[in-house]
Length: 527
Image (tube, rainbow, N blue to C red):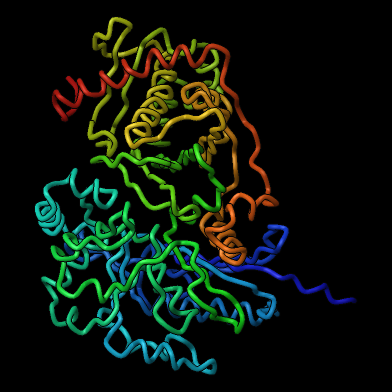
């Protein structure tokens, strides 16, 4: 049998919480190879659950750095055994779980530069880390350091204006401050601090890779407008921090040639920015992930940092920004209302949406069975046409109040960060609820924009491969959309109904006022 012709390709890597994964994408933007290593299953000797160690205090959460290195060893061996042709790799890039930090011991740079291809990486690097169990995004043990950082720069809003977010426990600057305060010896022995993304890139480079602007925006340290480290934030966290971080770089930078010889390594970024690239968002677009929690990805031109949400530098266009908003009451809340008011049936749930009018006759609802993140409210709050509080709606109206309320909240909070629906706006819907056409119809109506569905099983990996092609093509000099134009297009699922914009433009200000009313009253369960 004739051998298949070699395929020139780019690799996209994803160092996520539970696994390391790689995809190979050819010049026609087709994925033709995938491989992964699952930490709990494939590396049981590290004793992780869900890829992490949760400490006794219930707040500290870490991952063993050598587990990530060994996972890369295994995946490369698997690729070799499968006959993967590394000589055809033009460029590679990758993503890492955001906020996690790695602490390289003094002298580690030399070890990286003298790596031997004949030995596994984890054997050669085992003495290279001043901290072996690294804090990751699930850690929430740094409340004291968060308060110190906010106080140092003039408060939470001032920090948000500077870095794109108020102080969050998982953000890297606060984690570094805790390590400096509680383990000063390890900190003093650290010559370089990497994010998971820049750490992973360093393994391919054989030297320290810089932190990119987009992932660097998730640290509470980067001045997102000037794209330099904020001296006030650095000074609040730890001494000599700027030299340990190194200068940040644009996300599409080719950081230099690496593995294999002649292959370009494009700066790695965070998993959320890489997903934005994988979903191929463009200016004015919004992606809505409708999962256990609901997440919004926004492409912003002129951000307005607030106390909620996160603003990052855009990974594919350094002149623009992206924002993330997370809503905790997602699919579990939808399932509860389905069970209570639609006979536990998605079919009945859809019928309820079809049988009720847009705007629900002015009856509005807020449904938060667990304390919401955006906004900080708990309980179920219903308001009739006169905006008086009521204890219940008829069943079908209850279903529509939930879905309209969830999507109006998303639009209001997105606009609070500077997002504006444009004539060319597309909404990309992913996650479980994106399979329900009637839910997507409400989404299209509330935002006044067409909704498309897209498979995002590998969005961070795919986005990394796309970004590798972008770096190869010249990065900032070439539009990202031009580089990925051959990639599969999302499928149109819903367009706004006639008259939707008039209905919701009238309701949105009322909804926002009611939300403020609830916030200004009790934050406990409703009466």
